[in-house]
Image 1 (cartoon, rainbow, N blue to C red):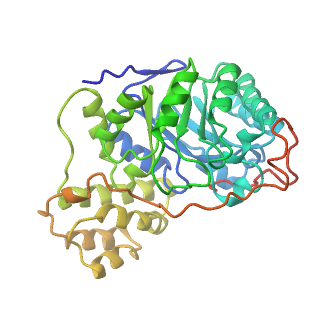
Image 2 (cartoon, rainbow, N blue to C red):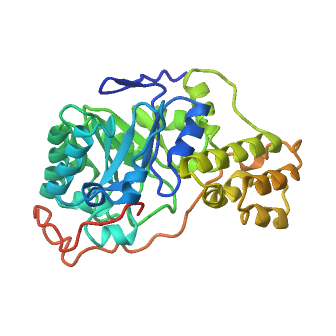
Length: 375
């Protein structure tokens, strides 16, 4: 049986070594609390842009909030300017806004990569080093971690160089989503890259990509030697995956296979937590709509009822629709191990003009800073 070692993150111990990946529009206070109620681990908030944070954008300040009992408070930052990164981290430290800072170098959406950010940025080694070092220095002992991808595409890998640079800069660990930016979320994750990064570094390496069940997490750690796992799309509509992971890492055989009635109770709980966080029942239930299809995947629920739930606007309306489900319906075992969330197809990565010409340039692209969060 695999014996995992708890991860140390500053003064915090992450046991089991499981991290909820930041997902825009998903990993807000409500969803993080729901997942924490299921099992232990580290739960990271949505990506925050450093410029928006420094400028105290109201939307951003609302996103960097945490539950009363949420510890450690983990925030993921995005930025391309070392000076703005430094100011943002100093603000977090001075105002005690978080206990842990994760740096985003994995985002592959065009509005980020065309500015040289996210998964495009590690190609510029000097700029990458300056950003990570600025964050670590400004953090004053607050743990800083890095999340990244294999590289831009199959011809432009960056992960080993970036891992070594981040290690030398003093980060606590590096997490690797084992796909290139060009893959986006398509195809299979290359777990061999996780093993290669683990062999190249002395600090902990976490693996991310194609973990749909607790058994996948154990297999990834066994095959790659990585020190922990990062869970993204696998928990969409399945917050109980964290209970499965806690059991798996503790060597317990129990796995959650909730009936449709148990799933319905979780769906209502999720919508209530969103309502409490947003301070509006209509906003909370409206925000919950995107989760309906994920929760109901594989269950025998008619299209009309699904559509009604995905258009509900009050807790009572949603509760009435949930009551119409066949609560005795068993969990559809045939969907175990299947991908969840977005997949899409590979595509060309949109980059700033001339981005690939010089790996050692530390020039910041014009207009590179995003001024809003949630991208």
